[in-house]
Length: 374
Image (cartoon, rainbow, N blue to C red; front, side):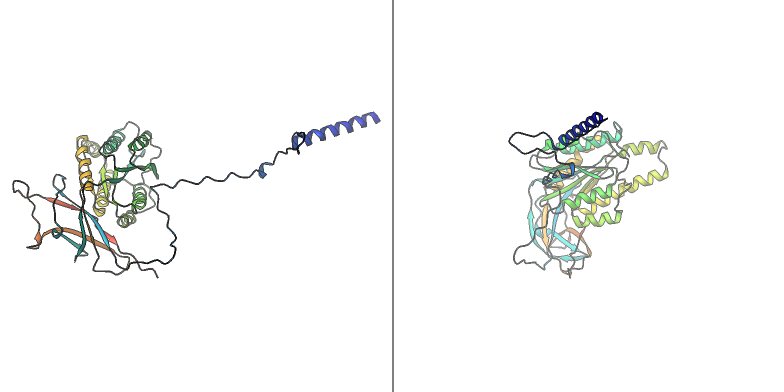
């Protein structure tokens, strides 16, 4: 019995030693015991600093020392004058332009004629299972339009690629490296979700671009449908008006819709939904000073891309201080006209043969006045 007790005690001491060895780790000669730290005692690795995106909003700088604010409101306008073939009309003088704000004539205090300046363009692409199923007609048309537009850009142009379904995703940040844009397009193979939240995507992109200087635009390739956005149509319009980024909209599936409609596959509700989608695209383009296109054939794409390029590269820059300097936060409508200063009548433009030319004027439809901060 005594021998059994000694054996049990020895076994207990051996188990205790093994347990202590497992907890502390092996002893090293000439050094302290290397203990295994508990999991909760391991210090967390510091988070790496995130690289800010050029596409994101600019951080607000904290002013140092005294600051000065001008109380004078200044409105800047980029105006494109195009003939009925989408070509720019050059050599227009300052006195030909008349600016109306809420139907009140304004005096332009700055005028310049821009050359072929570089563009900053965000290519916003609808890519949703709602229409862009793999190898479907809408999928093929979407990629044809997107790749076709990228091929028209010049080396000095900046471009970003944004795709949206349930939410917008920046596939490529602004860069003059077109390879980055083409690599981003490789991700547009199989759509993930069946939602198409147009309002959220276009408002978010315009808001990110509003502080970018120079000639900028959004090229929107979409059906115009919106299924589940947080923003409403009216709130989206207001957001786009405040951002003042021109939108050039290209509507998808025009020929396909006509084919289905002619064969009775489109019901009255679907037909109205598509008509509403087209009207939304037109509204966004018109109110921001852009254009809308609804091609039925693939052969129309080159002329569309050419029209967008001409409208953006050849613009007249005007600036004026509105007669209404009230900081009331209200939306004010803008209209730019071409007039003959001698007769105060609409300006008549003729071609080389003396035939009158029909022309259109592209600029933003208005702006929101700043609000006085109390």
